[in-house]
Image 1: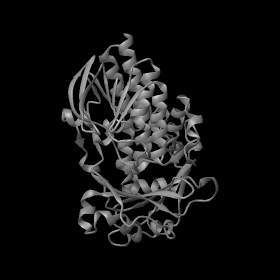
Image 2: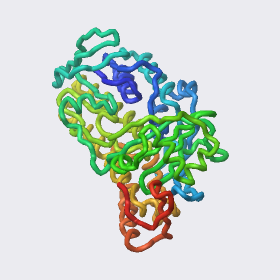
Image 3: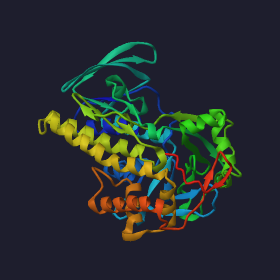
Length: 429
C-alpha cells in the first residue's frame, strides 16, 4: 500500500495497513517534526487513539486537556460554553489540544513501530498508474534523486496538496466557502478558569471568526478566518491581517490584551474544496486529500484519522479476497459523504447570524443543543444516528424561522471593517 503524506492521516493509514499484515510505504515530503496548523482535536480523535492502543504513548506528547468549547460574539463579554459530556451520544467526554509538530512526529513513529516503511523528504512528482492491484508514482528525494514506488493500492493522505485530486482534475473549490485564514502562536493569551482552561474559544464577527486554542502552559494558537473577497478589499497586508483583526474586535482584543507574538502571521487560503469521487480504481482519498470544509468545528484531523482507518481496512479486505474493489469503494464513499455532509451544512449555517443567535441562547427544544454537541464531538461516522439527524433538521428549520420571526432575543453583529456593532442582518457565508 502506497501512502502519500505523513501527517496524522497518512501515519494512521500506514499503521493500520501494517497491522493488517500489509506492506505499507509512507511518503512524506517534509521531515518531522514540522509546523502544521490544526491543533484542536475532537473527542472522536481521542476514541481513535484509544482504539489503536496509542493512549499511553500520547501521554508523552505535551498537550492541554479539552473538555468543551466556547462561542461568543465579537463585541460581547457573554459567552456560550458547551461541554462534550453533555452530548446526546455517550462517548469520550474529553479530548486535547496539541502542537502538531510533536503530535505528528509521535504518530509517524507509531506507524514505523507498527511496521510501516516511512520515507521522509520525498516528494511525489507524478502519479503514473492507478488501477486496482497496480499503482505507481514517481518521486524525488531531498538529494535530488528520482525513483518510482509501486504497490497494489494507493491512499492519498497528502492533505491540501490533494495529489490525486489534482492529477485527476477533480479538485473543486467551493465558491461560497472561499475563505482565508491568518494565524500564529502567541504567548500570554487569556484562558478560561478551572477545567475550562483548555476550551477552544471562537469569537464570531460579521466578516468571519477568530480561534484561540491553548496548546501548552505557554502557547496559544490564534487565528482569524475571513471571506477571501472581503479580506482583499480591506487594504491591509495579508501578513498583518491577524493583528488588524485582533485590534478591531473588543472580545478578541480582551483575550490577547497581554499577549505577545510574531509581528507577521502565516496564511492559508482557498481551503474549502472536494475531490469527488473519493475512491476509484487503485486509490482512496483520505482526510483533507478528499475534502476540507472549514476549520470552525476542528473536523480536519478527525476526518483524516477515521477515513485512514476505513481506507486501510477496505484495502486489506480487497487483498484478502473478502470484498470486491467495487463494494469497498462504494462503502468508503458513503462513509465520507455521510460524515461530511452534516459538517458542510452546519458550517454554511454557522456564517448566518441567526445560527449564532440560536446557538448562543440556550439548550433549545427536544435536546437540539445536545445533538449539536454530539456532532461537534465528531460522532458522525459513518453518518449521524437518527436521533441526532432529526434534531439537526429541526435546528436548521428553527434557524430559517428565526430569520423572519424572532424565536430568541436578537443580538447585534460586530463588524470588523466598520469597527462597531450593526443591526444589518446580512450574512457573509
